[in-house]
Length: 264
Image (tube, rainbow, N blue to C red; front, side):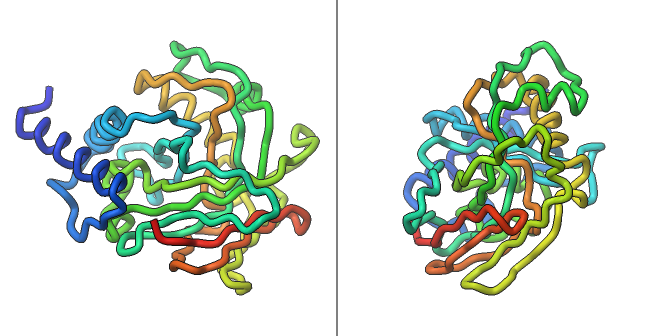
């Protein structure tokens, strides 16, 4: 049971982040007592989701390294207003001018069937069976609080998991027969390579991220729906960006997705 002080702190943090995101205002200092436990951080996230309103178009999954409280991943909502489809034209994605801003190359999974809300454990194959499409993409990580990634996963969770946008790139045709873990992924900023890797280094890969999300949302009592996206984690790392930067993610040397960073 949470004390009134805990409840007040959760409400204050949630309200501060929602208002800062609504107005595009930076928060130089964390707006309350930083949550120590993941459950407290998700309580802030839940309160902020309720305050923010709006349609949730998906969920980002990020890695916790090293694991904490037995958890090696975290989740945060992706709101529909921040999702953009790459269409070959120059696509601008906003970040907080005086906050934190980064870009991440990611595989995006689309949920094709409603997960059973009472099911709390999945195998990789069961998780894969609920997916109906895989795309390449870029997650825009940005927060009004510039120190969001310096204080551990609880602080990251408390501000929507540090998500501020999703660029949905081309679909991967025949993804059922593709070994995504073998695909080389590269992220470039202003034409310079910022990182390169494969998902073989990412725990149990993109579908492991889906398994985590299905289990985590069932535990939190949050329903998932067909059509929602799962941004499965930064393949090449979290790469800081500045306003005006051009970001390009390359997958297997064949599929690319790009955007330019702008101020909110």
